[in-house]
Structure formats: C-alpha cells, structure tokens
Figure: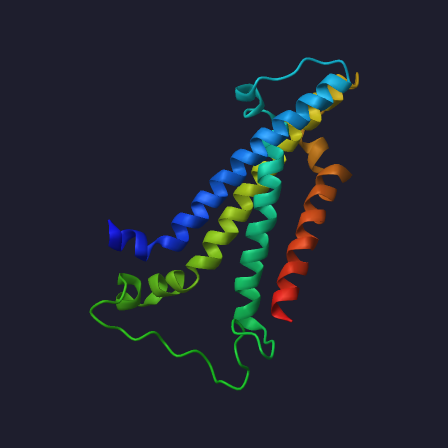
Length: 190
C-alpha cells in the first residue's frame, strides 16, 4: 500500500482536489440556483433534483469542454510547432523523430509496429479529442435542457436542442472558456 501511495501520490491528490471542488461547485451552484428561483417566485429544487438539472450539467461540461480542448490542442500543436525555450516544443534543428526502441518491456503496439504503433503514438491526442467531443455534447445537452426550462419559465416555446446549439448563448459560453484556456497556455509557453 505504501508503494502504491508513493507511486500514485500526484494522481490521488489531484483526484481528491477535483472531487472536493466538484462537490463545492454542486453545493454552491444549488444554492445559487435556488436563490435565483426564489427571486423569481419559483419553487426551489432539492439537491438531488439539482444534480439532474441542466443548470448543473451545463456548467460542469462547459468547463470540461474547454479543458480538454486546451490540452488536446496543446499536445497537437507542440508536436508540430516550435517555441524557443519551451520544454514541450520540438526543436526544428533536430531532424525527425527517433523511432521508439523495442525492448522486452515495450508496450505491445511498439513491439508490433504498423498501424497499432501509429495509433499508440497518437493515443493521447485521440483520447483528448474524444473527451472534448463528449464534454461538448454534455455541454450542449445540459445547456439545451436549461435553455428549454428558462424559455418555459419566461412564457416562450421550449425550443429544441438545435435552437440552443445555434444560439449566441451556447457559443458565448464556449468561446468565453476557450479563450481563457488558450490565454493560460500562451502564458505558460511564453
């Protein structure tokens, strides 16, 4: 157990911080949403109902979406572009990548080569792209649900998911997060 904790300390602590902050977001989001409900003379939600609401899921996935876009773009861009002084950037003076050495301890795709090696070499980018797409869809679904609820509360037609997807609100939410993520990466790179 001691070795496991030593070897996984960073991921254990980061998981704990993540879960603590997610619970904090849920609790404060619930309180904030209920304050808004009271201000408009509407019924408050119980915490379990709030956790199923568009308000909660839109906020969660909107943030995850921008994080995975940021990390995925960073991984891809650092593979092709150079920034002097950045540890993650490839040096244009170096000619090509050296193929991975095959040893008895190498992962199976490295040993087998071919398309499996190519997939393995791009697995981080692929995983981040899939996480971004999943979060984007989660943001869209949660946001559309919230948007429909708000429309109904304001006496309008509920609208469709497409209405929300093509709304300035959806794209404002996305762009405001995306630009801040790229600013953070730019700050680290420069």
